[in-house]
Length: 609
Ligand SMILES: O=C(O)CCC(=O)C(=O)O
Ligand SMILES: [Fe+2]
Image (cartoon, rainbow, N blue to C red; front, side):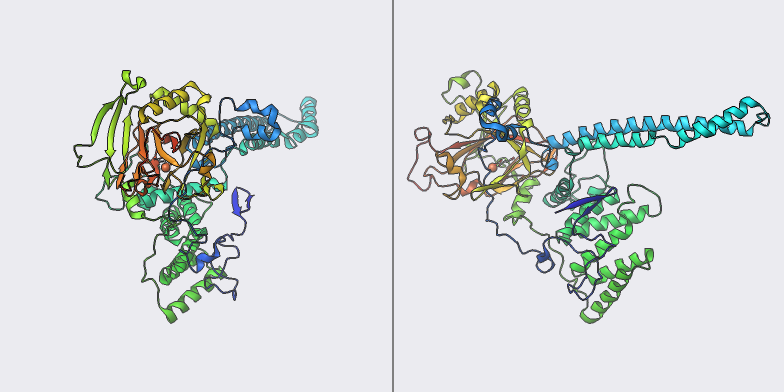
């Protein structure tokens, strides 16, 4: 997708701005008129819910052991491996801002730098204007003073000097250009690190994801509230300071949906944009200027047309014409809509279905678990579940036994409270921070970015820092398993982004072809996942088939077996990281492999085990 900046307006190549040369509403090439056409996925015009690419019924497992696994020793390899390796070892550039809150924080501090540059510019420009004003006042005073006659040779001299020398230097001063040049240069220095168009799209999709998974009302969100649509439920999150979205913010979210043919979301957000633009119409507001009421009406009318609601498309197009009566295209659309209504009537009978962009199965169950509607950690606690202190026969745990809470027996899932200290969690986050890169998943032989996993991650070797080593020993002690390479993967540290999530997936490979087997130590027998942070709302770990969710418990470690004793994958472990509604969620994953555990977790032929 090519993008181009024209003035301060971003133009996306291929998308015709609403009042440019739009597409026609009846899918025929007969006319040049019609509202703007989504430039991607032309299939959506006909089959908005038909997937373009077949997606497996479960999510791929997180990919492991990338060539750039971060380690304190990493830099040493540079001399041997050359420039390619040097580049590979450099911390990644700041792309995919929306996919990790750490990057969002960096974006905020970059905006702080921009603010300081703008302040310097304003200071210089104000000083320049003050000097100009002084010159103006001085000359004006001379012109208004009846006593200041050019009969006086001194005044005559200064007049001649002013006109031949002072005025030209005032008029031809480069100062303004220099000041704005400095501002441009300051911006360009930062530009590589600033979020781009993909980030804006990712951020818009994040808001729609939160809207969907937490069943939030769009009007509420635009008003700064996180209110479920069923108003009998309390808000899921109450921010310390309530900020609302502008009409243009809502317009942008709506346009992102519109461009992918997602009229379910475009209608909700453009409706909000239109009602906000209507309120502010006429009152001058530089920010609202960019997406005008007309633009929003245009997009909204066409979204309704695409959704089969012709009468609403007609009403909105007529409203558009109140503001821009000479618009030929919309005039023709109105005629077409009238004709369609007269011949076919309105198709609005079928309510618009929410699209399932990632082809997520069990979506309702998943979303209910994320909303905390399902069971949260063992509801009617059976007596065999509960809390205990564990030493596991390990000298490591004798002095400080693990605080184990058994959450489920089948599948076996336990939570170790206070598994790490605050200081250890900070160290791990600090070590991984500079190495974070957009998380990928294994897809056949390749690894790829996917919409169903939004986070950044980095891999830490135990040699990176004594704290990593200490955690590995502690994990080995509580699990009783062998974590020495290659029996376990490096520690994967994950930071979720705006609406960051990981939709239901298995950690173990479900195909023998999985790249996971490249380690030659079998499948992932177990997972230890440490919560390195708290969150303000959302972000629970949901076990879909086991029908319960674990809220983020800072410093706790969650353990479960992915494989049955006979080596088969345990289908009941299907799990997900729910979208983070508010906060900065960090986890660390340790994936333990089958080999090396033969005597620690004996296998079994019994299919029931
Ligand atoms: O973040 C979570 O709660 C789950 C993460 C997860 O399942 C994974 O990274 O494999
Ligand atoms: Fe997982």
